Amino acid sequence: MLITRKAEFSASHVCSNAELSPEENERLYGLESRPNGHGHNYVLEVTVRGDVNPVHGMVLDLKELKEVIRENVLDIYDHRFLNREVPPFDKVVPTAENIAGDIWQRLDEPIGRLGSKLHSVRLHESDDLFVEVCEPHAK
Ligand code: NI
Image (cartoon, rainbow, N blue to C red; front, side, top):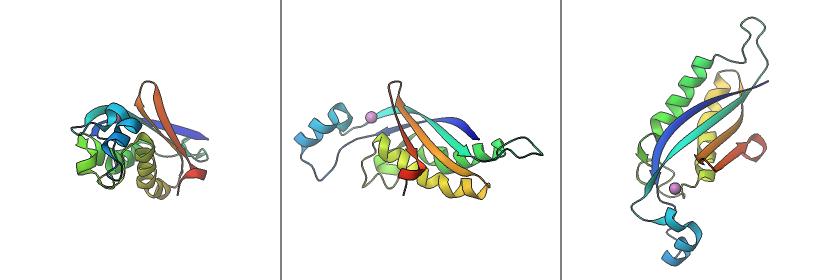
């Protein structure tokens, strides 16, 4: 059984790589590369896999899942300038792909401690773009 909890956070970022020329960054990332940054209202979907507990009829305690997401993602990401305030994005380009990968790393172990298994992390950067990290592709 899969169960998904949604959460939202707002954050700013700049997508550029210091190893590339300004022209190359502009070509790759377009407006995303402007140095003063810009914000997104990210929508996060965390999907957890497990069996339904026969006693309480749930895969896991949803209050605990909400708390794990708050503590390990929202408290760290919300209203932050990712490149300046949230490692590893001082060194890693904060694309939706890299943010979703980082969120997977932050959630995998705490969700395991709840007795469940993280199945996927889906991150919507805008209405028409989302990325999804699934177990086989995560580190
Ligand atoms: Ni952006």
